[in-house]
Structure formats: C-alpha cells, structure tokens
Length: 306
Image (cartoon, rainbow, N blue to C red):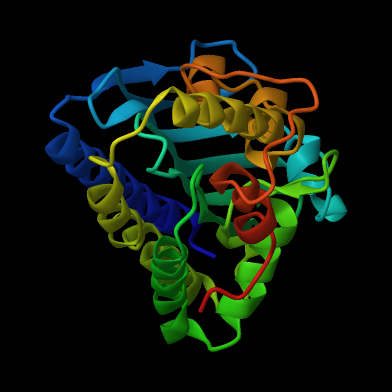
C-alpha cells in the first residue's frame, strides 16, 4: 500500500473541502471565519498541524466550527482500537475535517459532519488504513420535509457505491448518535461509518469524497428555508435546553472527541463543536401535543425517512 501517496491525495481533498464549506457559510451569513493555523510543538505527544476555522456571533450562525487536522503519534488511543485490538500499540497518522454548525434561529437544525482517514503502522507489518465519518442532523423544531431531504441526499451520495451501504450506514448512525444514558436519539440521524476500506482504498476514498461533497446540498437548502422564521423566548429556551443533550453526547460518547483528547490533540480545536450558549433543566416535562413534545415523540426516534 502506497500510504504516502494516499495520504497526500486525501489531504488535498480535505483542505479543499474545508475551504468550500466555510466559503458557503460566509456567503449565507455574511460573517468571515477566523482562520487559525496551528502546529504542534516539538516534543509533544502528538505531532502535526491543522487549520481551525470558526465563525461566532453571526446573524445566521451563532457558532460554526470547521477544522482540518493532520497528526501522527506513537500509539493509537483506546478509542481507535476498541474494534481493532490487533492494532493496539501501533504508531499512526490521521487526518480529517470535522464540523458542527450551531444556528441562531431555533427552527434551523444543528448539523455535524466528519470525514477522516487513519493509517496505522504496526511494528513489523504492512501499514493498514481506513476511512470513517458521516453526517447527522439535530433539529430543535422538526419538519418532515427537512428530515426527508437530508436523508435522501445522504442516500444519493452512497448509492453509486453499493445499494446496501445506505441502510447499513443509516442504522449505524442511529445506533451511534444516541445518548444511551438517556435512551434518547441525538437527532434525526443521517449516515455514519468507521473502519471502512472494504471497497478497496481508491473506491473507499471516492465514497468518502461523495459523503463530504454531500454536506452542502444536504444542509444549506434547510438553512435557507428556516433561517428567517420568526421565533420568541419559548423557542430559544427550548433550543438551549436541547443543546445540552448535544454537549452530553459529545463529551460522554463521541469517539472522535475521545480520540482527540486521548491522543494528546489540540483541545481548543477538538471542542469547537461546543455550542456558545446552553441550558439544563431538571426533569423538564413539555406539554403533551406541543411542538417541543413532538420533537421527542416523532423526530427523535429511529425511522426510515426515505
């Protein structure tokens, strides 16, 4: 496996993807991203560099973070080897683009996407590489047409690579993006995959590109539909409350967050997914039949949207 060639090709794609996505958000929000290029210091546990881009306080997006990182380390962290125990102790190289966009208007859903490649270098053996990632949608006030559009776009991105991939990755997403301590889905799902190279490296990378390229057509039409809808304190209060569930998932369950922190990654960049404002309520109960109650009963349950 020509790892150096593959890593260079993947890196060029990821850097370009980050640029395209942040450019599209600036176009709709009118606020430029802060661009923070960083480099790990010599002697640190992890080596590498990246570009963290962050938009804060915009009229459409209250906080939008989109980061690229390319790092290497002497030993894969536990979060990366829980399904690949034979690679425990291996040196590794990893790169990816990760984003979370927190909108200001409660009728606009939060979106998350990550696309990544990891190459492990077990001692005395050939390198092993794989891809992972996906995207998912987290509404506060759900709309069926938005959920259908998002899932259909995800399905269309995967169909050229095999009819069985979408139902498999959709179920994987539902299983993964779940606050298991609350027995509650984080959102309406999307697609998720990890440890993936079964198509061969070149076709698997092509699939990764298709997923990355699908983020803007999956999400931006929803933003355009919802960003100017009127809302009041009730909707804002519920949005902040539901953001608390987002924080819980990212800190308790998310493998990407754990990978970054366990490997000695750059904390400020790893936690760019955190919302700027959030609220918790003790045993909150919403009125039956209300839009807030319907979020849990209709949208935060796994279902086939397409």
